[in-house]
Length: 342
Ligand SMILES: [Zn+2]
Image (cartoon, rainbow, N blue to C red; front, side, top):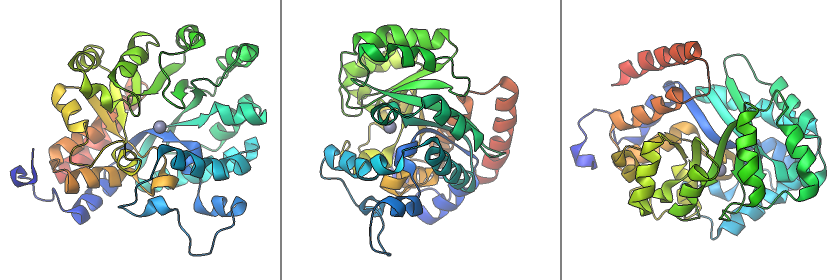
């Protein structure tokens, strides 16, 4: 659909879109705690001028390389995330910002490799983050496990993690190295057997067959990014057949140059193929984005119509990890709010 075909008043105008999507209740399914540090927290560990903001906050900024983005995160994450108290502080301010954005349901992950390198107590970190969840926000917490982050002697911590009651699931982080490592083939099913939800990052930097591996070998129900699935019609079919949900982050993809432009982002092809997608910020401290901004760029720069955007927002509630009763309540609130804009 192109902008000239849009019939609903309000579509395409970034100011109106921002107003609409700031007001709608929203979900956020793909967010890294380390990429969501607050600016004042950052300033406590990195010396920058008073007026400084991250370069990625400029709407047209694009990281030269993926490594430059990783180096930026490592530049503060290593100093900041050194205790359960620090995680709790960051999570508390993050949760409040998300509530202020109109987010009702949030799935976020923290990087296991950071804890592993610094020998931080994962159980205490999980409890610390859980303890600061405010009323009005449902939070599901995931640990991100690095592709090559775990070695045989860490088997016990891996097993112990599956018994942490405040940990809701696992995610696969790190450079998209496929085929998946042997330890993952047992661990992902073991996590599900222990009642944890499983997801994986795939198909952002890596090709469509990585997405297939995440589905077929790890058995995940959710893919983070996954947009390169469009490169293989069979993988697209697989995603539809498995009712897989892709948590897509257009602004992150644009600013990391994993897509050429918003207009050519494969999200449109995913939707047309019948793949269920949600919109998310990924690393809001790095990219300077809110969830509403994701809808704004698609409506104003890629010609998405309002109905499609509203359905993308609704998808988050449809696939949130909540009870049927909670889902009903969330969808009722969403539909009442959406009815006013459609
Ligand atoms: Zn991510």
